[in-house]
Image (cartoon, rainbow, N blue to C red; front, top):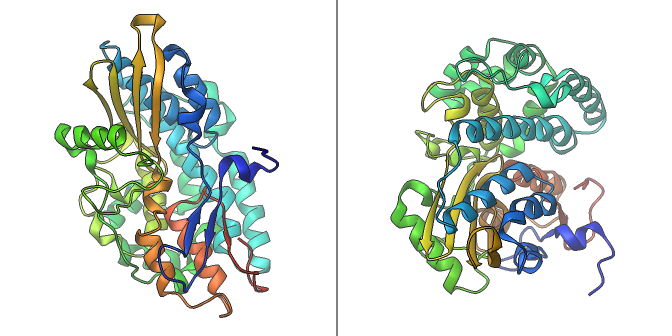
Length: 389
């Protein structure tokens, strides 16, 4: 097999709006984790996967380490530092996606370049990237990065972060409309431009909350072991599912996030939550959840709520202690849930007109940005002039 392009490694989602499922959403993503980790020392699995997955690499390292630790029957490392590290890395990922991707994906015409320049200027001032090695304040009751809250309020929100979050929690749809209409700034401008096409209810899949119980996790582990190809087209209890910042365990009312526009808002809302000091079940390092368990002898499963949704790793080992090697490693990423050929996005594509309709490519861009801003997609027919995915 010859790999000549980056897309050959990362894979791409090929899209045909207006076509019937399962032919309107075709993935070329390969199960590289299974292929490239077989036989490697268990102690090096976390670094191998962290290097393999450039997106959310920290979450993959953390998840792999927890899965191996569980399979070896060892005690789990101290969770506080892991939770704080996950908080910071997820903050960085959200800021990157909003600052780097949204100007291209949400804006129209010349406004896109202007928003890109303004977002770039804001990113240059973000303290999350100014001193990566020393951003953790050390006190969970303080903001996770000195100066972050002030940056968030001046560069993105235009108001106190606590006030913004309180309004979002009361009524996400009403608040996002009011805030984007009444507040100046490049970010509200982007969301205003996206709203006409993105603020429409779309088909929904059940929210992926398999990590609510140990029993559910054991069922998932059994699926991973017994069903070939499960990581490419996963189902939960026979159904497609969706996962993202709007489906967190601590999210009280995920069902109100029912449009692509509100899913974009949920990503911003999580950025705000993570930038605030710890408040149990609401903000800070306590917002994202993670866990691990032994599922059989020399088998372990771990899960992490990362920027794009729920990440699951399952490992089977041969040997004990530092001599253990990987028999199999399965990575179940948010992408495969959200872009299942029978899932919510595929259903939404089925209801769209064909790409000969003006503006349809932009609507597809917004749909993909809402569910996963990191995955490359392209139309399976020639692009009309308005396409820029």
